[in-house]
Image (cartoon, rainbow, N blue to C red; front, side, top):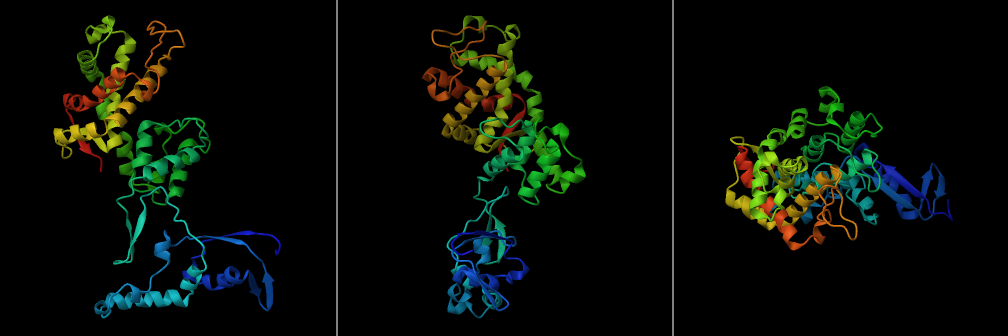
Length: 376
């Protein structure tokens, strides 16, 4: 192989209780390996080692207890136990192997990151890892066969479950299996709850009860949103300059405006989740004080208002509305609306409409007989 630069991928090199390490040192150091009495040169090469028994480099590379413990702490049983583990790691050429590495990458999976607790010598969940839903979303698109800017077709409750479930029992493999079971391996029709596999299959990969609860989360609230729509309309009239044809009772409104108000109520649970809040029936948790909810909303008002505007645009476009072309103005009969543009391009007065809609969320939740709590 001399004269070429091969790339060698060593999968689960840390299996067999690290007994492979001693055989990897010579190729790493000298660019050659022995087969009996024969020396096989491989020259310069790139070795990629993928671990299968330890989740991070910190968990793999054990530190010398003499460099961790002080003199007064070296008499206890914990030190002696750690010393024995380090001696075994040294005997298996662990430090020699690590010294030959040029870098490492801890690949994060769909579950919360695990960190190594040196005191307990155990892996523990890192509560500061708040990015795991993003990793799951990326994996979900790939596993469902979505490419480029194409949207992922997925039931909203199912998406909620995939992103928020506490743990996938077998990491990315569990996600991949569930996606394949739901889509039938093709993904053309998207991920719909009607295609969920039996409980026994789901339970192999996630906590079934938790998964189902997350799928159904917010559904009770959404079922009463039709009754909340008149309150949304009334608030809109109070805070904005509405066209004359809309200054009437809710029941007399055009169908498309009624639909907008219902959709506005439906968006509440989704948008509040952006600031780690959720809507639950009263009595099922510790309700947040109104002042706390108001403060959180104001601190994130632009984020929430933009999400509200995006949701409104999606609702409008689904009804066939579009933004005006040059020279066109608002035309409700032909479904043309000047606000069907990105939030950043809106006039300040139109942005304020979205802000006011968000500020009214807590009142709508209260009118519905629900309350706002922090997500677990």
